[in-house]
Length: 241
Length: 253
Image (tube, rainbow over all chains, first blue to last red; front, side, top):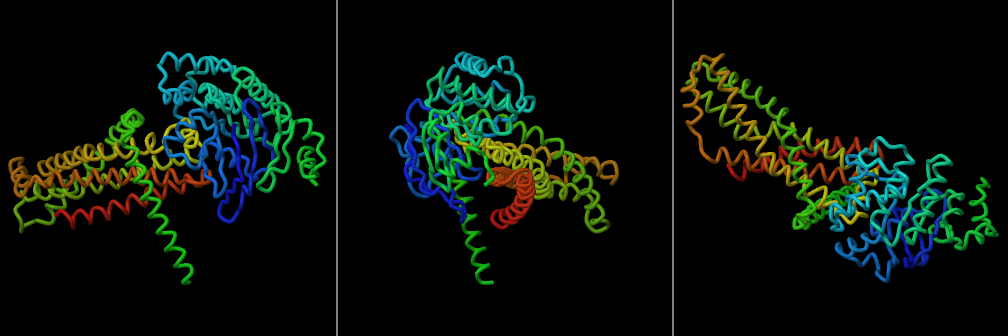
């Protein structure tokens, strides 16, 4: 289980998280929605210790992330797959090497690594791209490789940072289906950060809206769709005022 | 006015603290040999082998000019075989390490800052961390080690090249015989001339790569940030090379 406990984070004079409290249960997919720049990605980065809170803490499987030393963080990260907004693939490596890098760190044999890479690429419908470089792939393919890199690690948790942003509707739907398939096949807990409501309704078990640094509302997809909170309503309907 | 000076002083102290912290983290990553050994080999090729052409080009022409300028300066007053002394001493002690160091600050430092800066702004460094790699072990240690080990080797080639072109220039253009050139070369030679230049080169290598890594990994923003980091890496490296050069001269000569 992942739990945000009254997390505060400020960049310069700008408070980004101002008392974020949220629980993500095992095997669920929680979607965090919110306006651009409200700290959704910042919240995700706190889970893997890429950022540290000014106050409060993030608890992952009973461990407070901010108290972990370097080895503790390494162990924590081994159980978490992270899909970055722009995939963050290593430019100088082939697709296969991108996937293999994290697996090598886990001490797997070359044969096991090869099997895992093949399996993960098949799951994202990208078999045969092993030898290609990221620059040779389309935006959608890069995102799928990013997801494959996370899946290949067989993590307990997968964190998706804006997985469908910048994609055409069909490719976005492919990514949505892939996230659902990943949960069904691997049973992982997922946290998806997005402002794409169609995607949120497709992949989420629950949806939480982050507003002014804290959770404005959290509930099932149906509860969010029927909300009477004017801020949430405006956001999900995409009304300018 | 006073407030502005105070702010700058605080910023400078913070910057020094960040650099100290960065160096400490790099030292702490040294025992993680399994992570840095492979990338270090790749970096040794990129920093070392790939830098040889530009370094030798500079050294070759430096040797020619040194021989001609020495002869021009000595005319009529100092025996011509001192051309060998001046070419040898200057290449070993000063121009070999410093000119090559400055050239490599541009080639190695800039490319390192640009590469790491791009990795930083495209979240590749974050991705590396989420894959349970320590960026210090995977990115910084291999580069700094490769720079420290390979710079003395490249600069040894540069010194040799400068001396050879100085000798050829003396032979062809100055009417100085090979035995006379060698006589001058050996005249005041001390073993310290060799190790001092190479030791200095190792410190230049460590400095250029460390600056490239620090500046690259602190890049913010997009393409503009990467551009600024690249320029900063070259400027800081060049300034530090000249400061180190003076420092070692005061301390060791």
